[in-house]
Length: 126
Image (cartoon, rainbow, N blue to C red):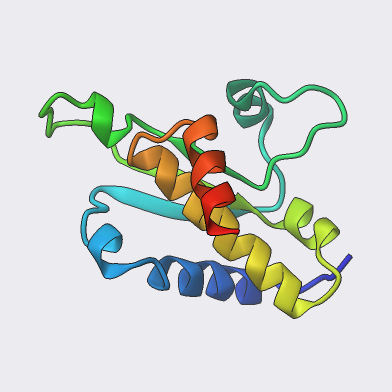
């Protein structure tokens, strides 16, 4: 487990967002990125978490692929959960990698990718 301040964690999340390719980052509209220590009960329910499961991040909104041209939608949210990422990290480098991966994963949901598609892309990168 590697602990850092919430302010430092927020900075790492911001850096991860800024490290997304410009071609994707420029298409992210009406989106808020948030840091929370742990998922709320409602977020855990939405994510379908069962006892013993953990959540690093959560996308909440209507994916671009499902909007059918609608422009008047509530802002989307991506929340990155600090404590689970700290618990999984042994040092600052590993924590940064987990944050970067989690931000990418949640942004992929915003663009309409499901878990299988995300894992397929990740497998091709290896």
